[in-house]
Amino acid sequence: MTGPSGARVVLPVHLPQTAWTNGAGYTREISVSTKSDPQRSSDRRSADYEWRLSLAELTRAADFSILPGIDRVFTLASPGPLAMTVDGIECTLRRGQRVEFTGEVAVTIELTSPEPQLGLNLMTRRGSCTGWTSVQRLNGKLALDPSAGVAAVTVLAGTVLLSDGRKLTDLATLVLDVPTEEIEAEACLLAITTVRRV
Image (cartoon, rainbow, N blue to C red; front, side, top):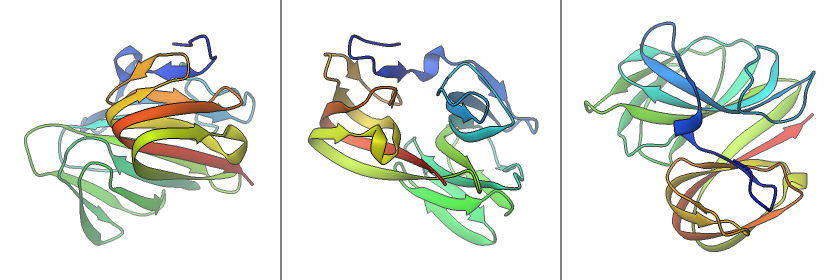
């Protein structure tokens, strides 16, 4: 969904979901950048991505796939709690908390409540680009600059008003296909995805 400002908004409800091979969840691809086509898109899948942002629905205890050469940032996008074990280290996440790890390490999850949990996944190909997710609480204006590496902003809670008047609510993602964008947040928890090529 692109508005007058040119900024693209991706809503999870409009994205196809792909079932995990282990049956423990689903993935909705928000945006991907490939070497052959650097345009960020929410409607292509590629094993040869430079970076990929997706939303996972976790339905039961499971192991994450081993992904050699990939660096990952997992941010809990639902209330939680979610128990994770990353390379033998246990942690418990609540909404907005994140864990960084390489695709080579063993990662397991365990749901501590009957409701499915949601995870915002940033995956970057090592040697091609680096990426991270910062989580901010914001009540006011924020200028987003893609030239500084800002690739996307996901609303974890609250409301965001775009410069063209559109409103974003829970789990909507603004993909930065425009030179700059200023947003105004109302009691928001935002996950800001930054990617830089190496």
